[in-house]
Length: 358
Image (cartoon, rainbow, N blue to C red; front, top):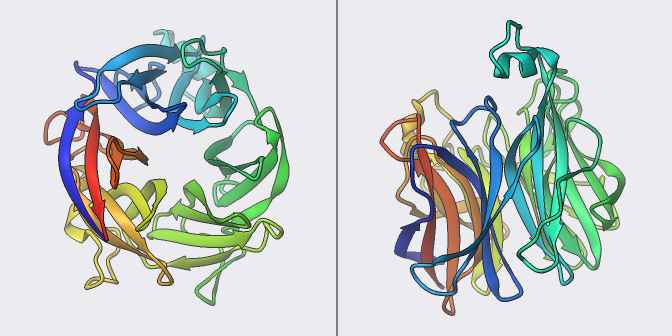
C-alpha cells in the first residue's frame, strides 16, 4: 500500500491548546471533535468542541457545539456514528476537594482525580444532550465500536492503584447507556503474548483501539510503555485474546479499513519511525519534540505496522482520527500538533487529505 499527502488544513486558531481529535462521517456529513483548553494538563478544566464540516476542500466549519462539565475537565472525545444518533464519548476528570480548591486559587494540596466516562448524543447533528455518566469511575472508555447491533467498549483503568493500571476491560450491550462487563482482555499481572508469559510490571497498557476484522472477530491495538501490542479475539470468546508485539514506538489512536488494507494513525518517535528494515525499534528517552503523527498500514498476517507517511507535526502531537475522504480512494486524518517546534504551550487541530493506492 502507498499513501500520498494531498493537502492539510488547520481547523483551529489562537493561543489555546486544541488537541485529542476524533473524526467520523454520519449521514453524509463529516464531524470532527477535539478538546479545547489552556494547555495539555487538566487544570484549569477544558471542554470538547464538535464541528460539522462542509464536503469540500478546504472544508468550512458549518456548525459548532460544545460539551462541558460544571467542575470537570472534559477530554479525549470519541465520535461513534449509528443510524439513529451520533454519539460522543469523553473522559471527565473530576477533582477531589483538594484539587477543586487548587483550581480556584484556594490553599490546598492537590490529590488524586477521578476519571468518569461520559456520553452525549445528537439525533439531528445540531443539538446535543448534556453529558451523561456511564460505567464505573476510573474505567475510561476508549475503543468503541458497534458490530451486529451490539456495542463493544474497551476501557483502561485510570487511577493510582497499580493493580488496576495494568488492566484493559471490555463492556458490551445494546446501548451505551446499558453496558455490562464482558471480561478482561489484557491483564498485566498474568499476561502472555508471542508465546511468552509476563508478570507485573508489564507495559502499563492504555488507550485501546477496537475495530472489526470480520463480523465475528475483533482486533485491538494498545499503547504500552514498551511498544504497541496487537490482539484479536472472537466475539463468542471475548476473554480469549491472542496478543503480539513488535516493539514499535507507536501510540495508536485510530484505525480505518479501506479496500486496499487497514490503516492505523498514531504518534511515533521520529528517529524510530518503524519500517520493515527496523523491526527492533524501541521507545527511547528522547525529548518530546521528536514525536510525529504518522499513518501506517497494518500488514496482514504479520502483526506489523508499515510506515506510509509522516504528517507535518512536531512537539505535542498525535491523537488522530480517520474516516473516508472527499474522493474515491482517499481518507481524511484529523490530528493536532504544536504551533511551534516545542512541547508547549499552544496546539492546533489539522485535517489531512490523503490518497491511498495499492
